[in-house]
Length: 408
Image (cartoon, rainbow, N blue to C red; front, side, top):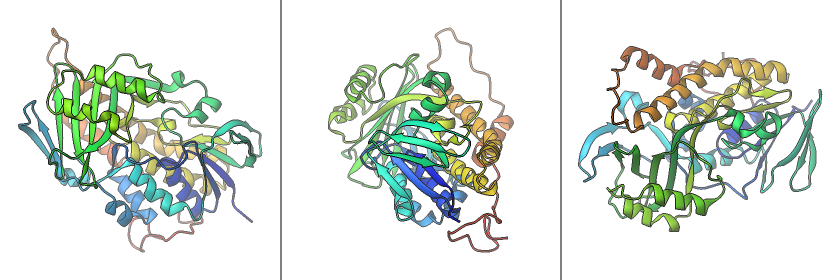
């Protein structure tokens, strides 16, 4: 008997990671992606704590590490470039400000796609146009004209998830803008950057500029952030986004003018609001959500990729363990993930608050409760159990016996 048919919307990180585990558990998987192909570049993303264990269980540790940025650490600098503070990649056991596993989003997406493309059907340049579900399955009409029926559908299509809007309701109901806008794009490395990230923060205005190394030493990644109480620029209107960034970064200083001058020639410009997705439920019938579509913690948490990877492992495992019963499997997945998600969302909100420019008459911030903060960080990095799913079908190569995740 063949396994269930599952349609996954989105081919960035959460989608292909879920496809990996669904395929290993015996499902027939189709991934649909509205872009014509994988999107290159993007922000550097991190895998910390339990997410590193998921990568190991996928058998992708070597491939992911080979594609890492190899960042040695980060220097916080003043407007003249003088170093104020230093963070190293091996701080806190590799789970610090600069993670031991740090990789460009596009590079991780490519590793995951290469791993799954032989056993998973990928459909690029198309999207779900309509969706109707009943007790036994989901009928999907694609924008390209195809009509197909699946047992389950999962939206892994990001913060602006079209599937979430179709099944669960409008964007505004679930997306919480955190008052910050983030932009990044690659530039020629004409700055002598060598394995060390540089970050400049203008505390008076709440703006920041950052320059980070990537694996291609001839290029670097520029990143800017600025406060914005409202954000109404269309996430697909690139010219409007570039005008906004030029306007908001005027007069910032440090390397900002040189970085902004490279913006129009960059092939991978990206700008969006820093936002979280907060939902009471991540599933409805035979349709579920994963990654930023369900529980974006924002880039300021440093854990969006970790949540996607861990969520993919647990969602596929719980669905398979339930005999592919969506009500049971989706509920078990949510039960395991929610506390982990909430801890990471709290970290994201705290990071944004730290960057906020203080009001002229503001009282000094109280000293943080370090014990509570340490506990929160630990819960955000390692605060979720990864079952072995020893009794669940697995066509992949399991970890060696006697190691975490190995066969019982």
